Image (tube, rainbow, N blue to C red; front, top):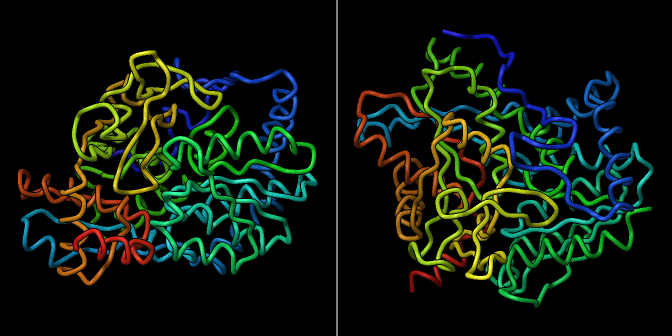
Length: 400
């Protein structure tokens, strides 16, 4: 067993921001200069003693890390395999998003920025960014699709209470892609005084690298906790994938452990038809969106297609370049779960373990249950990336 945390599949992209053929930086020259400043600052700070002491203090005393690793005994007894949950839902603000939001806010302060601009789908990144901005004394603008604002009202209210300016995006499908478009356009006008705190491992270099670095704490903790609890590594690790931040945060620590199978769970939504799902790695083709190259859902003209998932945080037509790279290497497997399966898992975990998961995380739980049925003697580690408080009202109305 390889218990060394050093990775031979590097956490960092190459100098141009590529993971294999994916990633990069497809930007206006003026923005490239600004992004180089951000990249240089991050590369200096990520190993800076004072920066890391401040971040680690906040992760421990403000966020509540390390988050628990929980053996789901009831779920395991029901389905045969041993299922363990990495409880990111217990973090302050209710999801993994606070991990990189704090890091990005600290980076903004070091760069002398006055404002954070962000997008959000399910609202968890928006709440986490608003929280970090309030803590650091920064202004905060959060762009959110009108459809998602209606679905995720509790998180919208939280952002406003925290002092953020929530801007409704009414273009296109009025969901996450359009929110990213609007936030990026706003940043183009304010990059001298603001930073764009992107909410996943997507976007132009250096943002996938930055978010991945701050989310890697999930896997480092989980790997150590699993060894302490079981004296072995899991047989497989499972996480939902929209942009892919919670998943890459978990996967990184296990990439060199060839005995550990890795599964990223994409949203199949209503079905396989274009526009009915957001399964970019399953149905996408190589393309460019929001300044980077990835597997991208495309329409008949090669433009980004409409994406759909019942989980607003997974509703994006592209995916992080590191995930595309891992798929091309054959190191990670990407599978799909439908809306219906996710809803069933939402209620199953709630009623079996007394844990209400986010609809995003429910996709990972659903696949873990199916995997357990087929592999009753295996040890399964699931990243429970967020809690379902934000989804309760929507689910009740949906079930009616």
